[in-house]
Image 1 (cartoon, rainbow, N blue to C red):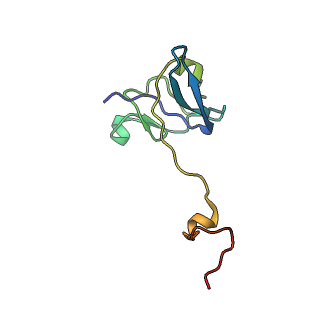
Image 2: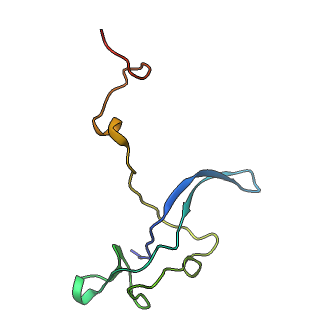
Image 3: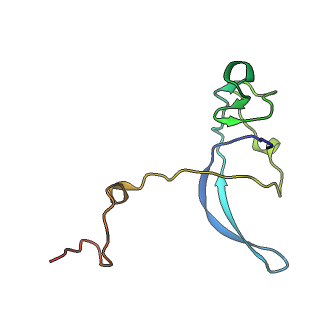
Length: 110
């Protein structure tokens, strides 16, 4: 399996791209801030694999701690990327798993 470079981003939203043929393609808009700085470089010798931060790579040549990742060097228009994410804070409502019972807010059973 081929490995690439990993980066942290923030999901801004979803939208659709309309191709000239009329095909609608759903896309997710992700913002890559200037805060993607290399803080850790793993090596095969020390860690058992090559990687940067938590992302495994085929090689870590050129990555040094404190280097800022420039996305213009990594991606070109039309590149495909794999995206994974975590849910943000959902508040107490989801945390304690309240049920809605198909009623409006603050319903009571009598």
